[in-house]
Image (cartoon, rainbow, N blue to C red; front, side, top):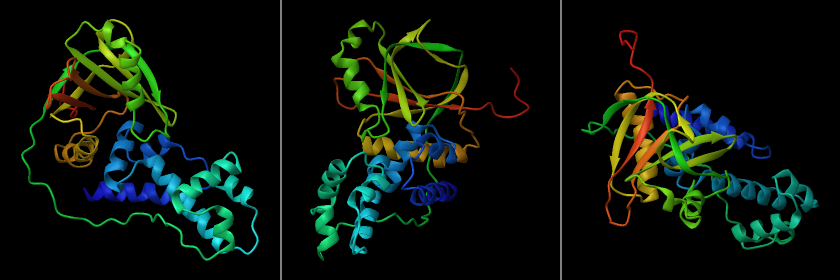
Length: 276
């Protein structure tokens, strides 16, 4: 777990040094050897807020301190510096976080709401019996519905799930299981929802570490991804296969509380003694 903490601290250091630049989520995820989807989930659990929200609040915090320490400042330049396309959108976001306008912040001694960067401590954990299985699957495809979850989305792929049902794509599913794959798409996530088929989104041949879940509570799922990727796989001496997307498998009927579903993490083949 310490190694995982060290990696996320490295990522946060990088974010802090580049808050006035365009941040590439794919590159941030790669620093932790994760997909963008996995990275967004783990970041949300470890830091306590979604990645896009953290970046936005840190930018507005630093913008406020600049305004408070400058006698004369061009607010439009500050808004541009922190990535806002126009001053009005910057003012709106600034007021939402700090309760005052940028001009009030610059000309008064009003208080602001400083959003601080996180600090981490190492706690001893582990010594658990964690049930999981490893399966091997050849190439398969997911046919159904695809959509993009933008990096600015608070809840990754929630909009794609909503569109899947609103579009009626679920009516075309004949299987009892829904397969969902999460592909990197620049800094965003391409989410494919559907059934196994002979066409659609291709999932490459791989071994999979499979973990059962009985809740879709986002906080619990984020925590589980954190535990799987930063604790359980290293404990099992397993390495994630970054050439293959993470897959989740759900029952088609999710109307009952506590239904069981599965997180499937692609893993690399064990060692040189393994034979095809």
